[in-house]
Image (cartoon, rainbow, N blue to C red; front, side, top):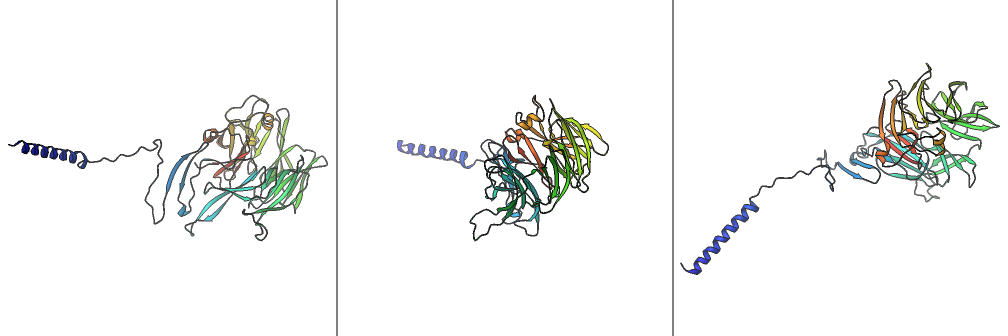
Length: 433
């Protein structure tokens, strides 16, 4: 065989072998799909469930911010709610009062269906601007930019359309009381992009405290007149007013949980004994239920059948008193009862912000003065069975120090709202998560 022929045969053989190896390793290879592990670092998991009808999608994403982990589920085509964070910060600046209301609204996609929407309105303490949040999305909307500086208390009616404001007048220490209504601005003269402007009138300078009725339609004002404490029932705008009580007692904390009774409790100090009374809103008659308790703080249930109260001094003890049988039982946790709120739907149940620990001090004085701050958990108490349940560890959820006060529930009791005493910001806690 000639040398040239042999060379050609060798080249062809090598080419055939190379082609076979290429086919074996690249074209004849079965690929096994790899399932990614949920929660792998650097990945966002997206739920691609097939839509139930044209145009309907559902996407779930998980994101983490500096403070709160947020998991949101949106099906906007059907007008369903987002799954909002369990703990949500509603304001980044101090607020001066809030109120929540729940209403039914039409679905944005299906006009024949309705969903519940919980709205909370709150007032910026520095400028008096009014903001609104809801439980359908994460938006915070400014609805009024009327400037009323240095507001430190605001009390809303049930429709969130009117309020009583208390603020410092100009550069003085004098408290001004003002009745305010939210009104639609006149489009011809007002170029504001907000929904409302504030209009109203001044109320009596002698008003020392304001509380709103459980129905949200009236107020009870505690006035200091001629050295006496005088209590009035009135409409929000003060047009109809009835004197309910006139007493030498002046240093009282006023509350109105039961439509039939206003409560009066002496301002608590660990150095003095405290007393608590109920005032009948029909007759003005007074009944004493607690007496001789140092550092007293008390809140009556929505039917006035129970009182949760705390005693102070060098430590804090919390107890529940049945007003019908005068039986008192100490609660397993200790907290200042200013940090509690009774349920309206289940009148034997109460929610409290409870400190993880109570430092040495004089209570409640040091807490009122800001010498001591707490780091709280939210607990639920059934006063019939005595059972307690941990609802939320606020510092764990927020990665922040939260000293919760001014606790409030929405009408459906899906959310617990509170103000962080550390910086006066407003927060909401989803009780269904």
